[in-house]
Amino acid sequence: MKTLIIARHGNTFRKGETPTRVGSRTDLELVEEERGRGIGLYLKKLGLVPTRILAAPLKRTMRTAELAAEELGNPCPVQPDARFIEVDYGPDENKTEDEVMTRLGTVEAARQGVDAATLTAGQLLELGEKAIALWNAEATVPDSWKVDVERIRANWAELAAEVQEGETLLCVSSNGTIRFAPHITGDYAGFCAAHDIKVPTGGVCIFTAGEDGAWTCTEWGTKAFKKI
Image (cartoon, rainbow, N blue to C red; front, side, top):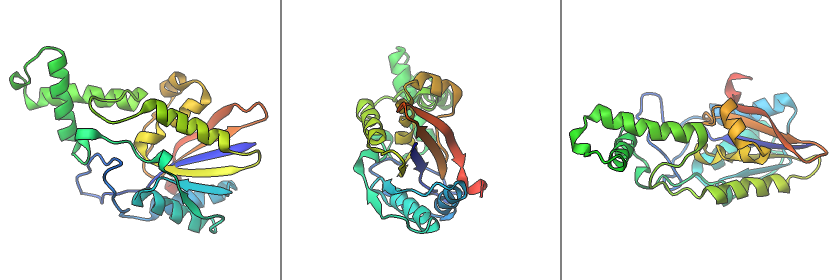
């Protein structure tokens, strides 16, 4: 059996703060440890102690991996791996969701041949929400975001191929990048139809492969800190 565990980093905004769309160019610290430690405690509870731990080279992902490793008894060092860094949100990097959706709504209005100046703020938000909904439902990349879908898919396939028989590998990444990981199952459309591909902070995803080498997702987006 091969086991690949993919986890999303912990929170970077405190309760009451206005979150922004944080991508690869915004390197924030964690504001809490509960979710990172929860990942480690949950995996320990399941008897899944990683033989290798990777994390995207950002403060939030590295620290989450380190906290998980501490709770697991530091079974191995955390290795930075740039393949799994968060996506670049282009002009929407570090912007609030309302700002993001307003810009995307303006783009969509232009695509439809509508003068954005004739639309209300609410109408622009509604148009922009559709683009974000597609991103969250099937990973359709919104206008001007710098997301190399084929490269990210290839990176997850490459990592899956690296997992050795009997190995348990943990990779800590971010929401935008993790949503492409289910491509390793060979049925991404089916996966999207059955799951919410937006993984919560501190969420754990578990994939296993048996003798036939086919990867199956046994857990997706489990809020580990609530399961311990």
